[in-house]
Each structure stands twice: as structure tokens, then as C-alpha cells.
Length: 382
Image 1 (cartoon, helix red, strand yellow):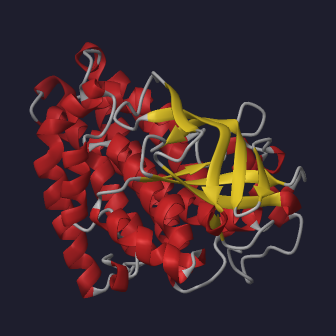
Image 2 (cartoon, rainbow, N blue to C red; image 1 turned 135 degrees about the vertical axis):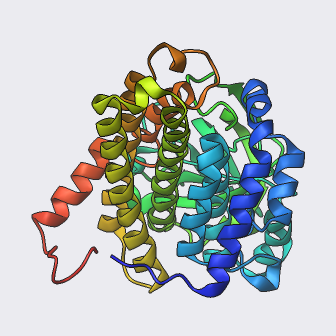
């Protein structure tokens, strides 16, 4: 498909590309630190990258899904970790507040989220509730003018941030119909960051355990309507999955660019059909994944349902990044083994692409269930 990119969006993406490439020399240090430093987030804020899904009246860009996907791809060409941080911050962090928050919540939270002063996250995953979101056991009980949360969330990206959207079972009710989304803020009594995970990849995305021990928050911290948190989470995840699919495309494309440069400068590789065919195959798959991302983002941009389109994009793009990593490692040989080079980093980073924002198996379930239901090409990617 041909994508007609609005002039303003094209200018923004060009600015993001320049910003990301200027940031590239700092990526190894971010990876070593195991987090994205605050000054980098503030720089992202000045570049408009932390307020892409925030309306203009609250200091954001109000850019929409297409610009968001294109920008995440550009950032991820340089750092898949920063791509993950920004994807989570914009999609499942900022967007639910912008879409479902009260006027008071928006006025209080969105300006600092848009500027990068406050990092936003999304807490659903638990030891027994990862792919099955309806099984969360973190509870929220109303006591007077407060809600009291108890439970533990695991593997939370941006978990050390200032604003976390937390899904909890309400009044002991279980299942999708008994969940509510709450806004929890850094410093709330009874809320703390637990263990910080040491992962094989995506190092600069600090991933945390979040512990709620009699965590008391004001009654007005409900996000959206009580007992409709599951529905809210599912809507936010459509955008989140488009962002992670764009991250996969960007990370794979960045590694391919490095491989092309090395093949050009290495006569032995330039004369090898095996190397040339690997580059051609990777380029074709990356472009196919990019088109799936664009289609899903375009559907969202038009206000259409994009659940299947987002799942197809996430499923294919994550697999593409994995295959690209393996093929490029094989082409580059021993030169790809030292820590920190783009091929080694993509190989480590890319495995998580098939796990977070819905495992590949979950996306296959989503797609297959729609295929066996009312889905059709004529009806569209609903």
C-alpha cells in the first residue's frame, strides 16, 4: 500500500530521525546503566516524543497513531530500548488518561507527561496473569474516600516512573467484568518499586516489580468507569501493539543498515551470494512488516477498529526482527559477536518482541478467533 504522509507528519518524522541519530553515541551508556536517564527523557520531551498522544491543550502534539508509529520506528533504529520506553509511555501510559481521564486528571497529569518530566507506565502483568489479563489478583477495595490496593505486578516497563495505570480486581470480583483501572503515583503510601529485573536485552528499558501493600489512593484516581478497566486496557493495547510492532521494524531496519555498510566495505562479503541474498531477504521482510504496521496505524488514524490489524503487525514484525537478527549474525560471522554491536544487540533485544504487548501465541489466538467468526477482507481488519 502507498501511505500518504501529511506534510506536518513528514517534517516531524524527519526531526525525530535527526534527534535519534544525534542520540546514538549515548546508547551504549544507556544500555550499561540499565535505564533511560532523566535528561534523555527531557530531551525526548523537547522533541515532542513524550507527548505524541497528548492533546495540544495539555502541551502534547496530538499527533495520532500514524505519526506515533513512524516516530517509534525512527527511534528504535538507534535504540530498541528507548523505542520501548516511548511506546509504553505514549500508548498505555498517556493515552488512557487523555482518552478516559476526567478533566481534573488530564489537567493535573498530562502536561508533565507530555514534557517528559513524568514517565508514565502501565501495570497489568502478574505471576499468574500475563497473557490472561482477566486473571489479575491485585485487589482494590473502596474504604471511604480512598481505594486500597494490594498485590504485586511483575515485568513493568517504566515501573519506576511517576504515573502508573494499574489494573486491579474491584471489591473481590474476578474476571474481566470486575476490573478497574487506577492511576497510582510515585510516593503514594503503600506503593513501592520492588526488584529491578536484569534482562538479556532491552537493557535501557528499566523493568520493575511493583508492590502494593495497603496502598491508599484518593477515590478520584479511578481511570474511566469502575469495573470497566479491562475494556479500557484492551483499547489501549491496540495502540501499544502498533508501537511495539513499529519498534520491531525500526530495530531490524537499523541493524540491516549497519550490515549493508559493512558488506559494502568488505570485498569478501560483497562478493558472497549468501550475504547478498540474506540482505535481500531481510529487506523484503522488513518492508512487509512495515506495511502491516502502517495499515494498522492508518486504521486507528481513521477511527476504525484495528484489533486484528494490530495483532497481525505485532505477530509478523516481531518474528521478522528475530529472523533478521539470526540471518545478519550468520552473515557477519565472528565480527558480530562482540558485545554492543548492532547485530549482537538485536539478537538479544528481539526475543522480548515476541513476548511483551501480547505473546505471539496470544496474537495467533486473536487472529484465528476473528477468522472463525465474522472477519473478512471485505469487512476489514477489525
